[in-house]
Image (cartoon, rainbow, N blue to C red; front, side, top):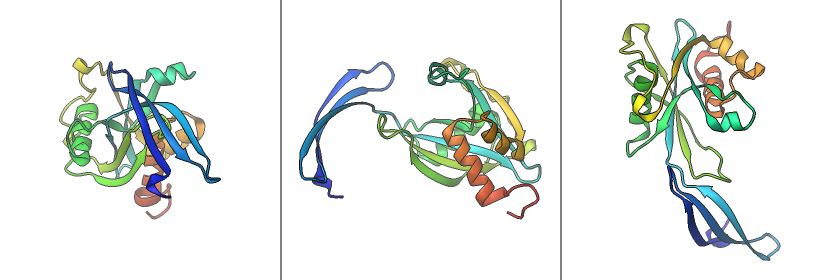
Length: 198
């Protein structure tokens, strides 16, 4: 697709309370040659990083549970099981993933392994998330986790059997997209299903 197929005509900031919400007008040359002009509201989100902690010997994973108002407004109770995650805030993705693991779960891990890079919801946000997995050791728990109180975080740390976590995708108990993808990545690339060689 040619880069001149789409031209940004105008960007107007509608709100900037936490992240900028813009009304973006663009002109797009359609496949039939016609030129169409459209406007869409887009959140100019910062990129983020997420890390799913796993323990190979115990076949377990560590997730977080916290309230998400968007999920509540969509009909969920709002308390989602997720991989630890946060905005990059000027750091590189791997460094942020290590920091979020410590802040949210209390586990100190040495390194993360890159899994995927994805756009979260490209029709309405600019956010790209860098997904990682990392092996944790029960002996290296350095705190309670729970996130940063001053940022309004109130995070419960949840350790689950890996196969139980996979089953929770099917039952709808795990519905966070990044977490579902990371669990599937672990199944496919690292741990396999119970009784299978990884």
